[in-house]
Image (cartoon, helix red, strand yellow):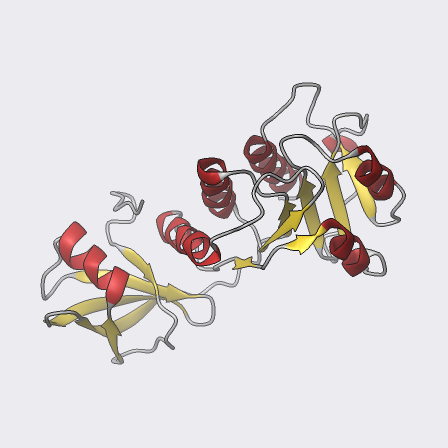
Length: 244
């Protein structure tokens, strides 16, 4: 769900097109429906358009057609390339839990979503287009500019093969780990990822594999058993705060 906040005062929409002053932008489909039928916008209304390449611009609705709106870009409000520091590697939970995970982790700030099919993964068929829509709306709502990438699912073995010779660091949640966040050593010059397992946890064989990889590091979120979406949210919040 999108929100119009008093703090931002203007509606924000992601726009794939190149943004520059005086350019005309045609909005169709979901964005048209949202502005006209949900927010009841009329000609003359100003909104904000943004993307990671051009930044954020103020734009005004100058024409309303049956199935489209024409906006004129006015001026740039801000331009900042704030790169999110962590990727989220995760074993997808089912339905609403997955929606919550994707929405909230986007709001917190994540660079890439990498779904993994492990032995105990519940959800093996993802509607990626729907999840990308949730990501887009979460970015619009949370006053961010960068849209995280969402990858097609890969198997656990493919993940290990992908990263076993990589310089990236992967921090995986392990209830049996005795390593606290204060003891994590994170090199922010490298690519860093958080890996959250499925509801039933990693299998014994998968845990053995993870613990024997040179660039995989376990950490603990405490002794309570957390749902996977809760673990993902908590991990990103704590890791982002640790490195601010």
